[in-house]
Image 1 (cartoon, rainbow over the protein chains, first blue to last red):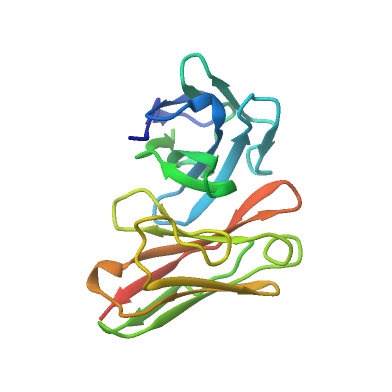
Image 2 (tube, each protein chain N blue to C red; image 1 turned 90 degrees about the vertical axis):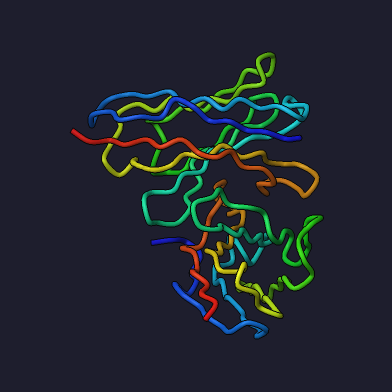
Length: 121
Length: 109
């Protein structure tokens, strides 16, 4: 069965960095696009970034452009999000989600359980 | 402020039909399909409706979606207590981003 397991969240000071990982299993990871989506405490969903199956196409939300970097290692079935220059408003649960599956592009058919990132001094 | 506009709350009694609206613009809903996600309390979101009105396998046919112009709607018929959740619409935007609605909290009275 499809599984997505995020890790790497935690408490970090403003201006600091954090690297999130998402381990995928149960499907051919290299065939699928992937995205990161976040949810601030008590708030709605916000799409963060997208990466194509080969990694050649990448998109970012304006709110993270220039600070976050999405990447993937298809040999390790893993997705990453390098987060730099973190701000208090980046505090959220970060979900990785499978994209571009049977239902089409930019449609998230499987989600991980999320990892909490807290940016606070 | 979310790009797609949803009512913050909706409610209904068991057995009723409720609808949740989602309003966008020509660059998102107007030119791309709409997807809906259900988020039960304390859990990750789940794909509920894709491509405006299609249900993934396993989603009951009580859930239906529609789109007209720059707006979309999610309808839930035969409301059940387990439908109490947050519902989000989403769409691709031509500015190369995915946009979500702010979410609608559905309460089953």
